[in-house]
Length: 276
Image (cartoon, rainbow, N blue to C red; front, side, top):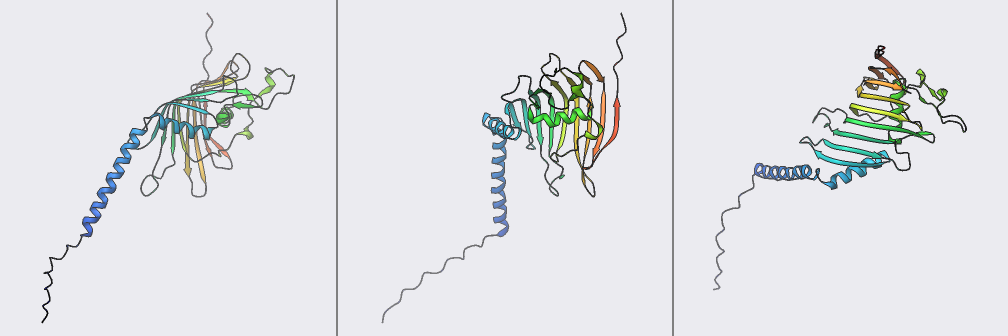
């Protein structure tokens, strides 16, 4: 009779993988990848490539040429930009903007974070507005600068000048009417400006108007029935056509979307110099 070979004895059963061990290994791998990406982002933020990307994105948003000298990310991944310069081609030399430091802060949505709106912090901004043709330049800051001028009741050119008229006629520089006060229509972001200067120029030797020591805080508010914006403007000195209008000046207002309510207005006047 034919003999059949005996089957080899079966080995011990393969141990079953513990789901907790697999989950822990997956978590370790994920955390390691996140840590590598986090460190890489911090390192890359110091490079010229990161600055070139930031210049391209900001230039596209502001429709101008942007130059950034310094950049880095904070441990909280806030974007910090240093020595920014804005140039708008095809306009007069006086139309420019510089900023010593800009910080873009992000907040995680609820429930992971505070859910607050993004915040833009600017320090040492110097904005020089120049009147060319029928508009203020740089165009990226035209609306914001005009809004500051109207809120502070600074006289600026109200409309393009007719041909043949003198550019220094005082009737071309009319204070903004109360009904022309702008209502906020910008994005819902927190804006904090410290130690800023804004100067408006025409073709005259001296500036038309100037605001020095400007502090601006824009804060979005969530009311039960509508979104609102809170504004706080402070200035060390406000002048127009060589005359000091206020020194210092403080304005606080609330924009409800349909109207702007003045909460506080305080204007000081520098004492006149005593005769020798």
